[in-house]
Image (cartoon, rainbow, N blue to C red; front, side):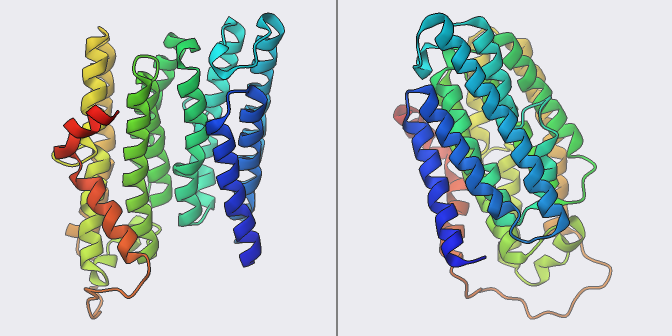
Length: 346
């Protein structure tokens, strides 16, 4: 890809995200979402592979439909109340439409069908952007309008997302699709708590982005795309594979790793809100996700391939990505002891 084109798309992504997260007016928030959508499409389709072109078209159609619903929702609210402010969404139809639109943008069940396909058609770095940066503006809109959302609809979609994200990830062999269903499952955890504690949703999103970035950057360094290649990648980079194992277990939410912190806090908050049944169900559904994370860790570190390759093991890789991977890998595993300090700052 042309360096100037890459620079323009990167700056547009930054601009679109900044406009959306800093705006109070619905039209500005919508403009930021549109800039983001148009900026990521060249990055998805840059390989010119038919699957990449298909992914770009699917992404564009879904995001355009979701943006139309956002605009429709805000217009109906302005028509009835005269308010264009993000925090003043009060009309019931507008609230329902906004919940649907943001669910489409994020990939919550039942609007999740596009997300695994788009991730599978993208490169690993673009898939990382789609899983983290592109989710930030819609989550910010949810955060700003959390008091207006429909709690029953959001809780139903959240539990369905946690169930389907875990269930559909079980039989996948492509790592990008596994991480897509992992993202859907985590979004379920974020959505269920946003009405009761919006700051906890943001904390969950930040920690999820940290752990996902670690996994994607390690996979990008080892050039691993599917389970059959992850089995032999340990012969080239043993240390990176050991780090990948810990990052995956952190994503699964096992203590004493960082990923345990948001799940623990969400279950605690749901119990305080007298939603014990929802807390129990979503905790049980996380076991489905735990199974495929354990399968990935098993493949990455324990399984020996049938024909072992006679590689010289690279204990040190001369790449510029080493330092960022080291920093975010450390953060994605070791933040649990700092949880009291994190809670005070949140």
